[in-house]
Image 1 (tube, rainbow, N blue to C red):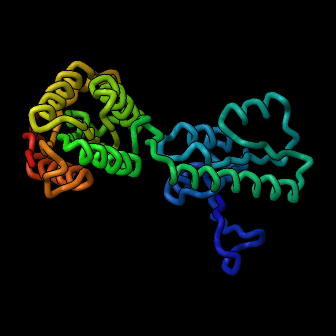
Image 2: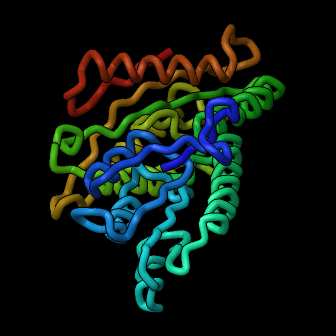
Image 3: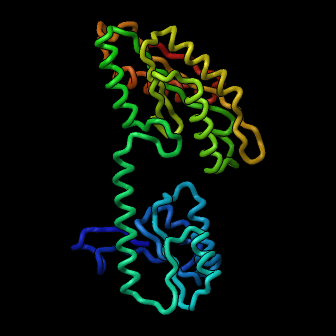
Length: 291
C-alpha cells in the first residue's frame, strides 16, 4: 500500500509503503490507511490476492478510484488475467516481471486517483445519493436566498434524518447503508418540488431548501416526506425496515425583512435537528422545531 508523501521523507519515487503479510491484515489496513494505491501478491497467505482485491472492491468504505495492482511471480494465463480484472484489479503484473514498468504504471495510476480526488472535493453533488452535498447545498442556499430577498419572498429549510429499527440493528451492513441512502434519494426526488434544493448534510442527515414556502408550506413538505418514507421500506438482510423521521423546520415569510439569511435558516434547522436526535434518539416521531 502506497501513498504520496513529501519527497524529503519518502521512499524511492516519492512513496511511503505499508507492508502486510496476511490477507486479513491487508483488508484491515487498507480500510484504515486509505492508501493511494494497493499492490497485492496473488500468493498472499489465507485468501489470496485476487480474493482480497475482490473484497476490497465490494466494500463501500474503499473508494473505487484506489488503484489495485496484483502481482505474481508466475506466468499468468489469459484466464488468470481475466479473473484479476473481473475482481477489480487495474493491472496484473506477471512474469517476465519488470520493476521499472511497474513503477511507471503505479505513478500513472496514482496521479489519476489523486486527480479524481481533487475533482470529488470540488464537486457539488453527493456521489452516493445524487443529491447536493453540503458544499452544493450551501451554494444553492445562497443563490435561492438571494432571489428570495429580491422578491421579498418566503423561504423554508426542512432538515430531516431517517430513523428506524435499522439504526440499532447490528446485522445491518454497509450494503444496507447504501440501500438507505438510495431510498432517501428516491423519496426526496419524488417528494420535492422542482424549485426546491435537496441535499445531504451528514451521513444520515438531509435538508430541503424550499423557496416560496413559509411555515405552513414547510409543514406540508414534512407531511409529504413522512407519507413517502412510511411507504418506502428498505429491504436489508431479508427484512423490511421502515423509516421514521426526525425533522426540524426553520422558515420565514419574508426573507428581505428577516434578520436571518438562507444560510442561517439552514444552520438553525440543522442544529435543531441534531439537538432533537440527542434529546430523543429513539422517538418514533420527532417534533418539528420551528424557528
